[in-house]
Length: 133
Image (cartoon, rainbow, N blue to C red; front, side, top):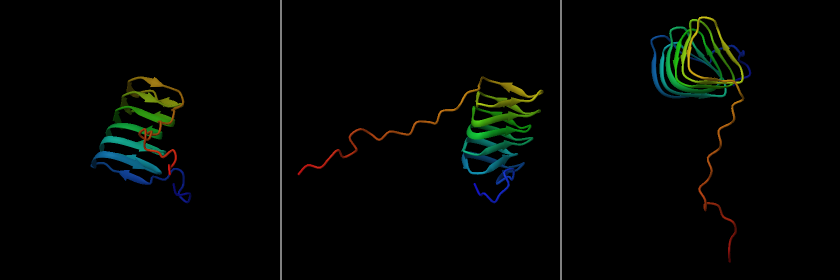
């Protein structure tokens, strides 16, 4: 993330009326106010704005739902915030969870640290143990 940007500045916006389908990987703060379907991954902050419709598996540092609708599981390494009149239908996992009065939440909640996903192992027999003469 660019250190010259303020911590609250949005670095990308999918505005109202936009429709996106696929995988989203980003740095900085991204706000979605339109429709998104797919997968979202980042080590930064995702904001779901008022009127947004998101159908995705989300794995980010922080997720903030500010009135939109999320359908899918959300994993956040730092925090999840859901503000009224937001809706979240799916399982959530984060060490810090805030759910405002008036929020519609359907799913399971786990409040514990998220373990990093294990790295893919190289197939057996691909390394060289030593050279023979």
